[in-house]
Image 1 (cartoon, rainbow, N blue to C red):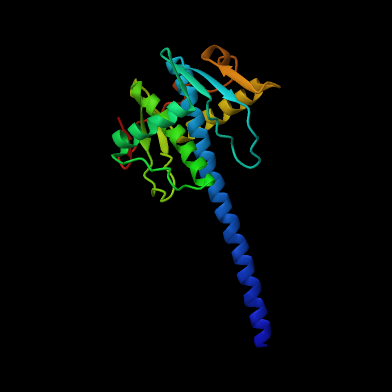
Image 2 (cartoon, rainbow, N blue to C red):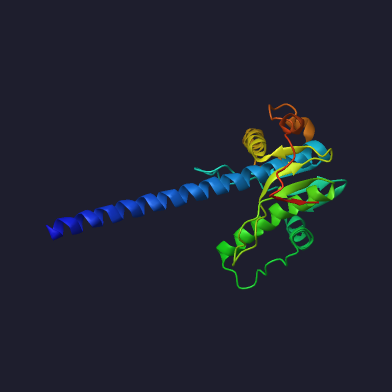
Length: 221
């Protein structure tokens, strides 16, 4: 009888372990999708509202998550930013927005460096948007110990003071990613401006505004 109870306990433990792992994977996918769609919507805003011209290079498709689009170059106000110069803006962004020092890449392994580089580019894009008079509601999250923090936002506040909330940023980010994938065709690179994007059914920022952000969140200015 004790052996039966032991076997039953072991089965339950295994099942719980499998469920816990699947739950963790789902949470990671949801978090990753949020990061990707917000970054995509930030690039879309730079293109449609600030007249940026952006180039992308085709990369491997993602299977279970929404693809994060990282630009090869951004031309903004007659200045060309490549990935390195965008990533360098992360240092100013962390100091000015969060009053934090950027993480040193010394002694990072390849995985940690790649994650940090991605975060630096995403934060650099936020810095560019902020420099144009836009602001955003920052979600306070626990800072990573070994890699740079990818600053997570839950809304973009337009220069008019109107707010585009997270659910609409997700909608914009997904539509923008789909348009970019379509534009690649068989090409390895693609150049995108507002004129090209106007041919696609991507929700405009004006269509996506809502009431101001809640007081429990921190707004970057």
